[in-house]
Length: 212
Image 1 (cartoon, rainbow, N blue to C red):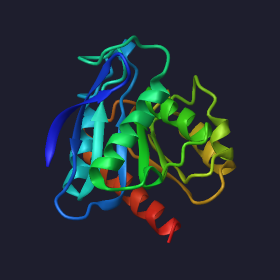
Image 2: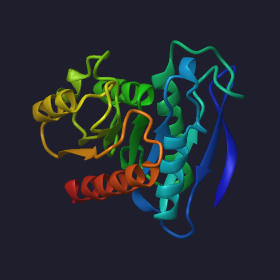
Image 3: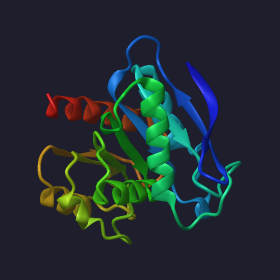
Image 4: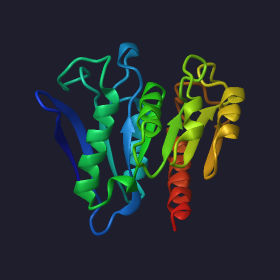
């Protein structure tokens, strides 16, 4: 079932959409974090929507949301976005009957960096899936010390997440880990949304195997 919901955050709420399949959802589930709002990023971004639809079609419990200060979400952007991700993970875990550690964080660009802050800070996630994290501008090397599986998806024509930097980051991380390079894709993945969703699904399957 798919529906719009509100995530309470004390004195404001976050706008979100959740999908929980009938029966027993496949683990892990996922929370999807959108790109930078100051550059037009929100939960309706093409990559976020494509990933949400793709994982929902594959029987995953999945949630996308607008960070604080974005769209109809209350609050102000610029501080506390990692708290938004953790609140979203709690909502989808309860709705799907999963433990929080059975929910992965999948973030695109800025959302990937915010998701990295969660797992580096100790969040017990099923996996971190970074889609084109801004490695050219942000130091995410601390991911090498996090306890959850680290997976990265980038295009081979992306100057914001250069393949060389992606390879260097994954090389420093402990297994289970993975890197997928989408030929022909730049930072915006126009026309490659299905490829991103398929690769994220593959990584979720790998993450589930890692804990068996």
